[in-house]
Amino acid sequence: MSSSTKKRQTMAKMTRERELREKRVRKQEKKDEKKLAAAAALIAEEAGVPLEGAEGAEGDEADVVDDEPASV
Image (cartoon, rainbow, N blue to C red):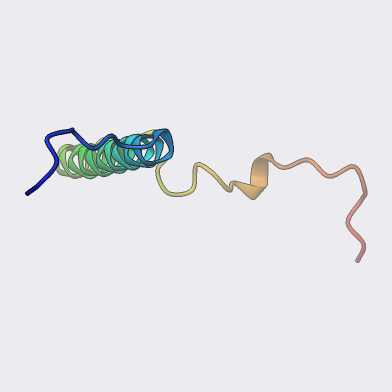
């Protein structure tokens, strides 16, 4: 015969499960954002409009100012 009492989960197990669910939600949100960015890039590419943060926008050396003169 089995016991009629309900087994209870420990707080640690409930915490682990909650953290796992939250991690899965964050991962899905990141995937969705990536899909939206790819779709926006595709639409912009078709329209011929450059996107902000596109190629060359992050690492322009022309905007970098050095305090030291270049040695020749």
